[in-house]
Length: 241
Image (cartoon, rainbow, N blue to C red; front, side, top):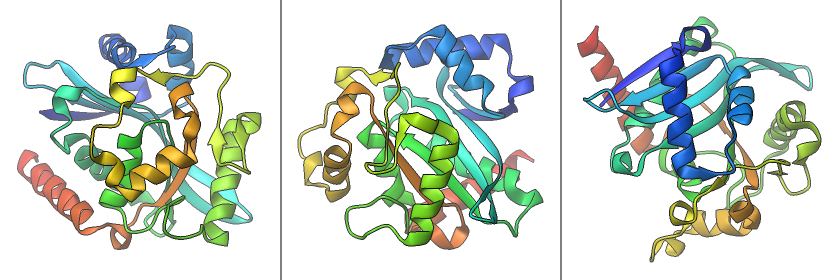
C-alpha cells in the first residue's frame, strides 16, 4: 500500500469522488453537500492506496494554531476518516498519519501539539490506548483540569451548540452513522475495558453521536506500539527519499 499526503488545494476531483464513494460504503446518512462542507474546513488529506491505485482509506485534517485560556497550541483536528475492512489488518493509515502530522509540525516544534478527534466507532477509540500513553477521556483516571480546559475550549470553538460539555458528546443534526455490520462489536471485544468504556460513555454512537477526545501528540506520549509505528514510518520515508 502507498500513502499520499496532499493539501486541500492539490486534491484532485478524482480523489475527492473516490473518498466520497468510500465513505458512503461505510456510513449511512452521508450527503454530498455535507461531505463537501466538512472537506472545505480541512487543509490536508491523507490518502491510502492499494498497489492497483484503488483508494483503501483516507483521513481529512485541519492543522493550525489555537489559543485557549491565553495559551497557544497547535491542533490537528481529524475530520472524515475511514479504512476499508480489507485493510483493517494493517496499521498503514496510522503509521502514515502520525508521520505526516509530525512532519507538518516541524515548523513550530516548541509549540505543544494536540489531536482533537470525535469518535462514533469503538475501533477508532481503541487507537488511543494502543498508540498513546495519555489521552482523554479514559476509563481509568479522571481528566486533568488542563486537559478539560483544552478539550472543552477547542470543542466549543469548533462545534458550538452541537457540543455538550457536560457529556463530552457532539450531536449533529445530520449525523453520519456507521453501518450496522461495521459498528457491531465482535465476540470477546467487550472484555477490553477501553471498548466497554467507550460504549458506555457514548451510548448514542448507534445514532451517530460523537465522543470528543484529546491527545497530546509528542514522542514522549507514544506507547511502545506507537514508537514502533513512528520508527517504521521514518525508515520507510528514508528509503523513499
